[in-house]
Length: 79
Image 1 (tube, rainbow, N blue to C red):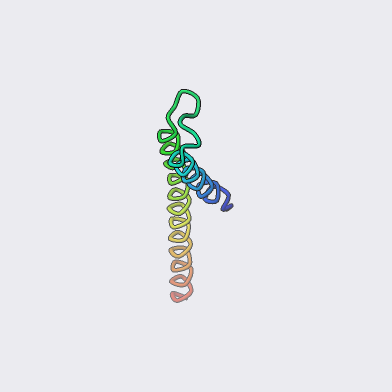
Image 2: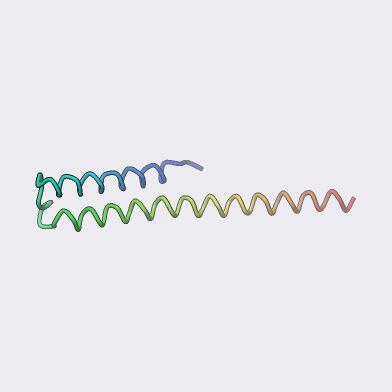
């Protein structure tokens, strides 16, 4: 299982932070027809979604592996 989605999420959150910094300094006011704040919120939310989804899926896989390990150990004890 690759960590690329989580790293992409972190990159999107960093991009959102950079957009906010640029907006606060007055470097950009809009991206196309959209205000920078709206774009930064959207990009940041997608990044957070990727990171949390990756962490939750990894947690579920870890729980499954632990349950399988317990079943194997219980099967060996019965013998």
